[in-house]
Length: 230
Ligand SMILES: [Fe+2]
Image (cartoon, rainbow, N blue to C red; front, top):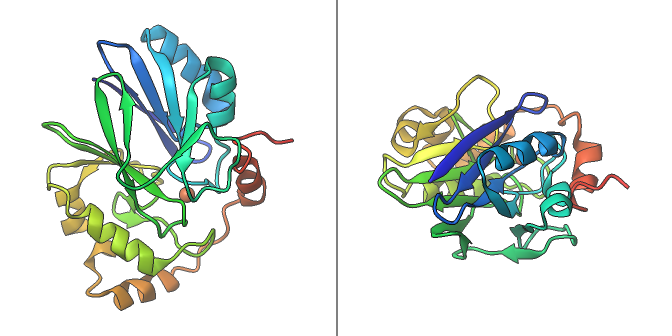
């Protein structure tokens, strides 16, 4: 497997490139529109053909590259079936599998940060979880807008914590310099996962009082049209 973790410093967003070595087919998770040229260059340099681009959820802090990548490569674009975006090629739902060459990626519905939040799981000797903004390293995604729900997120986190301890956790963002963790490490050391009950977690999330993301008013409507600003 070919794997690259990509970073957009402007929004502290991670995007992920996953490629199948034999077929040279590739998938991008959470691409950022400003990085389209760089992503296309990387695909060419690695001799990969982009067949699929997906977003884990409707982002409020950056504009998605889905539309631009589809225009440039003809790739399929997908989000969860709860997403408002009408410009997608197709949608996925819980339990679906995404195929990239011989790779099979499992789709896990993990609402809470938003009502259209998904995680992706790639099984293997070192399993990988792409946890979007559901599970961050030493944190969890906020639940106070975009139909977020701390109750649903608590349930989603519990589901993700069923995965094996050695599962690598690749989040949608990081603001502190973390790049990767594991389920076992997060279970032990993530302060948000130390809540004793769902009510405890809801209280914890209600106490955060976070400012709105600075791009929210632009990014959410743009992302509902796959990144087109018009
Ligand atoms: Fe988000």
